[in-house]
Image (cartoon, rainbow, N blue to C red; front, side, top):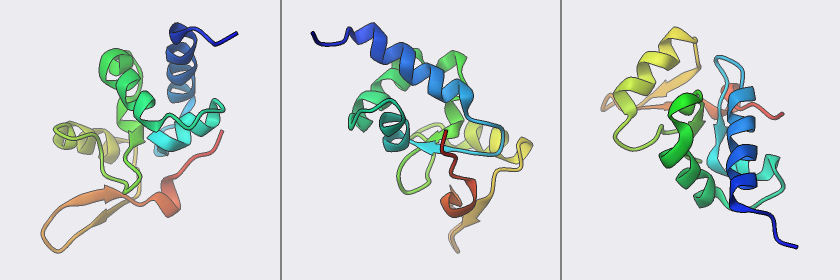
Length: 103
């Protein structure tokens, strides 16, 4: 029997809620944590249901925050002392080598 879509949503949100301050997971990391390969599905869950969980702690595989949410995510990253890397052009991403969390 296939799992219900709401099970996927609740499992994704549960993992995201468990990410500690200053740590992050990629969309693929979250999917893997629930036994899935549906990184894009995690992205959809975050887009539609992620407003009440620490959404900034879920980043793209490159370490960049969700598109169009960079400025707000940066505020959270700074407040939580999340390790960041900066390019010469002033673009940031999370330093995944130091900030990645595995449940």
